[in-house]
Length: 337
Ligand code: DP6
Image 1: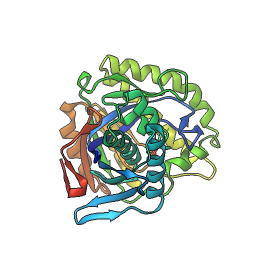
Image 2 (image 1 turned 135 degrees about the horizontal axis):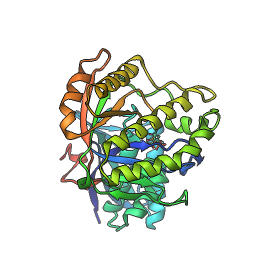
Image 3 (image 1 turned 60 degrees about the horizontal axis):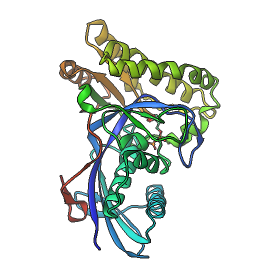
Image 4 (image 1 turned 45 degrees about the vertical axis):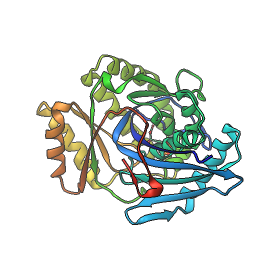
């Protein structure tokens, strides 16, 4: 009766961004998005199935042991556990311990990794088989739309086709194209305005409608560029779409400024690198940190140069990854690898 499952689920970086929703609670998006699943930025989560009717528990696993989760994080996790339990048709309680390998709420899709991990580990603990499509829809219902992409590896489009409630689909596996993501950390703390509020305000920007007309063409370009492993084609469109997301945020009502001065420094340094022939392109989710997409050959030079910039306090060298993996150990015992 004691099912337990531990998984590592990755964050992802959007190449074409999800921004704006028709239903925020269930994350029904106004536009399709495409992302690359990462491999280093992961959320490790253990879920243990308890007895029937036993209260759920949510814990953060830390270096000094387990700490009870609180606030909005706990509420969202409990709501998702209730949703998964209803889907699975069980009344067993669930205990969760979770830990991220990277700073939360800073534009590294922590909710995406967290809710993908929670979804996959819960069904694992309950010993219920689910297809990737079912996992994608369940993860999306957490309210973190980007979580619907993190249950798959490689390059992922969500939703698949014209139905906004459709699951994500893998466009290509990680092995298809070894792209790197040099994550440049310029801000540690949580961002001031959540993605949820950003989605809520998006349509108030005068630039929002225009982006909606451009998105289908951009999605097609990104899909083609991924299929052809063509960074020259991919780069300009992902940088343009990211800048436009922030343009919309800055011109929403009330306005949202995710950037900090070092964000602009990184953007400029990346533009200068391109003038010197280094192929690297910037993108940012809803936060100040910059993800620099480049080839394996350029990664070393990109990371070394950006690390030296004023206001940069760290670099995470990441790259395309395989999606959620079952891992050995339990976060309840203080270890999982
Ligand atoms: C800018 O509502 O999925 O990252 O739940 O906070 O992870 P979180 O965000 P979500 O919105 C994601 C917005 C985005 C773009 C994207 O990932 O597509």
